[in-house]
Amino acid sequence: MLDRLDAMSILVDVVDKGSFSAVSRSRRIPLPTVSRKVALLEQHLGAKLLTRSTRKLALTDAGEAYVATARRILETVGDAEARAAGEYNSPSGEIIVAAPVLFGRRYMLPIVTEFLAAYPAIRARLLLSDSNAHLIDERIDMAVRVGRLPDSSLRAMSVGEMRMVVCVSPRLLAAHGMPVTPDRLSYLPILSFDRLTPTTNWAFRDPNGRAVIDVPIEPRLSVSTADAAVEAAIDGVGATRVLHYQCADAVRAGSLKVILRDFEPEPLPIHLLHPERDSLPFKTRAFLDFAADRMRSRLRRLVESDPG
Image 1 (cartoon, rainbow, N blue to C red):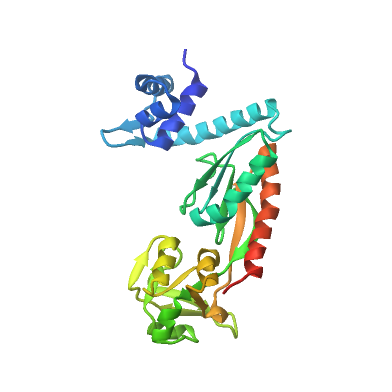
Image 2 (cartoon, rainbow, N blue to C red):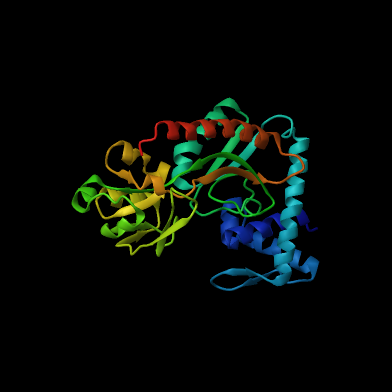
């Protein structure tokens, strides 16, 4: 007899992990069992859900619709089980939190470890990635977002904001001079952190009004991580633009200097996000209350000890 919930769960897992073998390994069940349960589900539905090739799996149109519905059903069942187990009344179970890599290490990891100490029945997974995770598809309970938020079904709680700063090594400033206006950046070599800003121009704000000043840039070097941008800037490769927390240690140590502060664009908002639900599990409510105040306090300390 087909256990449809189990088959749904396996199908969603196959889609998320991209292969039958990956699900077999993670669930520690034989590969033929994984394949058979998906095949039985397709037979029950009378529809092809996956197309298989030697290189990858892809959902059919019917599969796309079915998996979207299956995710909602599995989430509803998970919520019901959590309520029955008391998870909505006392903090227990696993909480999954996502954050950008450097921000997560610096700010979220200490909060998660403090939360675990305060709530012994909780287990946690901290997913660190500079790509925005899909909270519902990846069943993430909470995520940090730095930047403007698109309209969505997610709930957002503001916890602070973050400056975008231009920083440069004192050695490079000594060789090229201090730019006092954005257009003078043309006298410095440019190092671009291309995940934060386009490689064709940097936008600044006119301190005498709200006008935007677009400055064309021609990077000598473009990198895809903030760590690399900061390290190369310390080495004198060029002036770079990063988020304030990403360069704060180097500025505090005197390895970098923030320039053009009066022309910085509006700071980017920082939010804690969670999927919108009629009622949150207690573990999620507890973590939101626990994390929000601590995040605000840590970000406030960054501003108060502002080295830039």
